[in-house]
Image 1: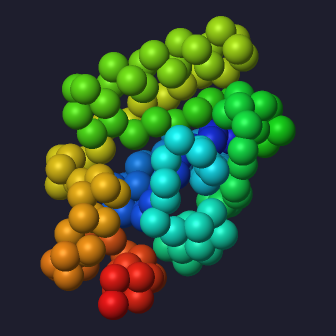
Image 2: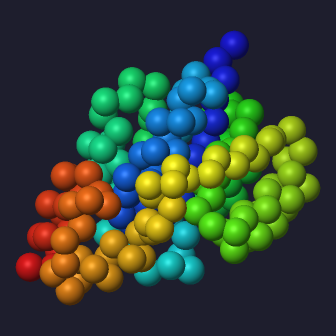
Length: 159
């Protein structure tokens, strides 16, 4: 039986930190479903469709990764994917507090799912999508933070 995990997020935009979590998740699971959320509480720079396309481009080298969009409850999406776990990347201690709370809620909603936390590699600890967008909006260099398809998309957005 295939071990499937869901890695949810807004991925606005996808960074090398996200790709690090995906690559390391592939060492633990047979398939990683990257779940791009519509999450209405955030105002994304890129549309849902653009984020999905960028993620597909950035994960093309991984043959066991599937990128999908979703809305609604994460546990419902996870059930539909026949996944057994949810992956959450952690960058910092304050990040853990929010993620831990969400993991407890998800466990209440779907007791059969586990949440697996993966600490971001030290070289990406400082990295987040908000910072990348801010630097890019001021025409700063972000090529060390994001893959080429994202760099091109950011340059186009902030021309």
